Image (cartoon, rainbow, N blue to C red):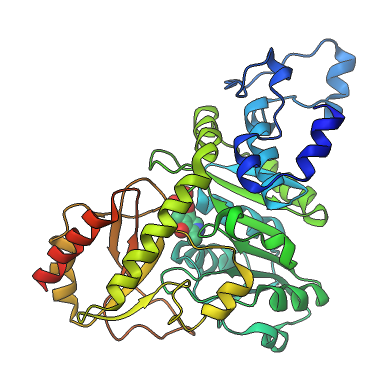
Length: 390
Ligand SMILES: *Cc1c(COP(=O)(O)O)cnc(C)c1O
């Protein structure tokens, strides 16, 4: 990239950066998008080049290709990170940094509103490897200081919390963790780097399920971890020790997905907020958990930290579980299925039985809604079908 365009880039906003990634088309005869490189073996000019391979950009397919580099560089720029690694799923983007920074005998602090498979990994695998795992209240803020021990190596955050959407005071928690020498990591999947950038709040590593909004079409699984300079090398070493990276065709789909993520997110945001507001006025609804609603208990904390909302929220229904299941079974446009961030709307009955600290919202059935790119009026009509079945 020329020096001039490098200087112009510094001033560009996120939407422009999504459409014009740091990849330089002139590095491949002017083709707008990076090549999709399938490859394991990389050939060397000579034995001397082979011995000095650590200084080469590419030496083996597992270590990366021009395709994976293009996506890593774009995600690093969007997150304000020193470097990014890719892994085959969002869950692998959670487990890789935990394996990189947790050792036997360590104490690990995990937010209680965490994505359930993250909790399962900590309770099963980290515990078996000899770490002690403790869960804390998402609203703990500076109170995290009372839980820090000399052997606390990692504080794991997710904000908003999975399914219940609690907003954490990220800056306060990250600052105290750093004071005590612990590494912080935050699952930033809900917000994408467009709406929240954890590293700007003092977090060391930002985790994404690229499966969700970056992919955007329910057709791939991938994850990323973007790290600051202090944590990057250990993260990259762990990736290579475990032998994981992302597949070329899926990487290409995420590179493609990012181009439209800005416009898609704004549609998701607008439709979800309109439906959340509409749902709030329904007599069948006891609460709508959407951080951008003024009625949401953490709304002020949300406005302080996020530049907008995505399209995932939850509704607490004023009925029993059997009626909530009738509601779901009556839906026609909303699919019943896991994951989210794709083009299509989804609904799922949430299970909060694994929570040990953040145990509110368990008195009534909670339904999580992913609002897709359909016309919101049709979605409204679909939800009416559900209400009629209660
Ligand atoms: C979906 C999700 C993941 C895992 O992503 P997969 O690609 O499905 O493994 C991780 N964290 C959060 C918050 C998620 O919603």
